[in-house]
Length: 360
Image (cartoon, rainbow, N blue to C red):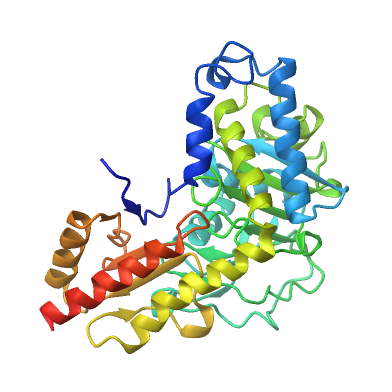
């Protein structure tokens, strides 16, 4: 069985050479006589794995020394609660709602204090990013929260909001390591790794040290305190050890590929192939305002639900899998993360052209 082109939004495609390397090391990691999957997280061998993973990530993103890198569990969704529990000192936070996940984070924050919706693009099914250059932000909000790339709707902030001096918190799950970032613009930058970095089960949190305090909301579980994880170098309890090991391999692969500026070029090139086709197609249309388009997630429709279903079915049979759009929006979506080769996008467009001719 040859490998398919996997356009899944997550868990998603991983670099083939990383998978092959992991397969070779499955039974015996570097002469240890065992798999990383069965190794104590307190062992010297594993200590090297997690420390190297952190260092490689710091190198890739130029993470300053006053930021901690935490490898945690619970996915991005657990961060929806962990962020207010740790950061809502004034019990007030601002949220910009540009999709399903930002909305869920906003609703979760409302459990812990006053969550203020600073802007939203819900009026047009989240198909654009609102203007965030001059938002009305109350002076006493603890932070401003965004979801930087919206997996379901295919939008991406090209410019960060003007937070007027307030701490910016960003969920970058689906654009993590797809392009260079200036970490210093954020107080917290976090993401689930199952889209662009590794297998499901790990969430990476990059957090400025001054935001890590003992002073959390009353009732915050020990496991949900950033300070506990920071003080214990992500080893307070057994971490998702194997997942972190795969992330580490992906970091090394990214370095080998030339780092994040090289990835950005590759990603722009891949996305252009698909968007250029959508812009001239008579059958398929993209659903996002062009200036806010994501490089990672490309939603599109034919305007006819039966035809959409037919396309997904035929594409799957042809080896282009997981193209069905999210259940909340329907249509199709191609997620073209770092590990998706350019050839996968070119072949998908060839297939779409053929489908268009047959179904015009």
